[in-house]
Image (cartoon, rainbow, N blue to C red; front, side, top):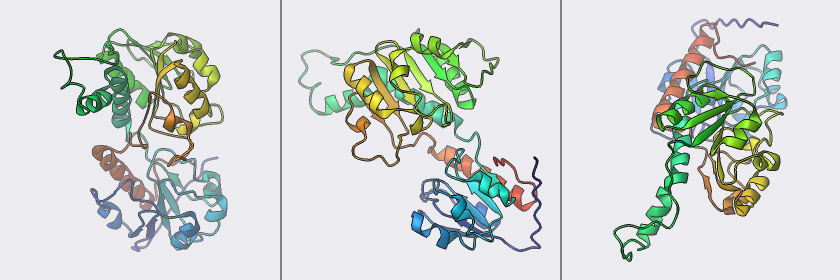
Length: 330
């Protein structure tokens, strides 16, 4: 069923509330593009117990990671539009919004270059060990070396190595382009079964990708089918010493199985920008696992990327106010 959203505002600025704006804009950007369109209130962060109080009069509600359940939505009588500050929106009950004819708009395709760049930051770290050698030099290992150079960790070239990509949307495609520039072979498994016309890329089934890849990078959404995808069975099919990169969602990884594979040496390294719980709990097994590179969900956070996100958000709000919501996902 197609829902038609229509909006008439009679020269009145709608009340807009951003509940958790800090990660998008810690101060180096401006919310003026939204405040020029609305009567805007911005909160850096909003704990669960204050969501209803802060959002109760909102007509436009913008969130990043704040949960909007059906129970919460039912207590926001003036709500007319919800926008996310991200591509993902699994913390928002889109069905409950749809029942009230409230559009939910996300931010698509804003972080392609930044996430692909992070994938290769991980890959290059795994083969060049820049951070570890920097630490070694600062500890005095080089000044005490008898030769002009030393290496106490192996170094590898990417040329001729095989990269397996699981999921081939815009990010997966961009990763493949960078991989080809490094001289890598690229194998792709796409859960949708859709095979694009990417040059010099081999589309094949999952098992072939796992068996033949030196590096695996995951670029699929978190769904019932992909939850816990990187698990003991998945890892058992990999080459010994393969490296796995996850910039998708923490929930696609079984972190206990990955930690065990790192300890046994089955995996040479695991690189994650996302964890099952964020921020992580102190008992997360990856925090103490060897050869595990973790960044705090920052693949999307380059300045240019956040600026692009802000522009798309502005476009979403404008489109809604004009009566033609865009990037609607419910």
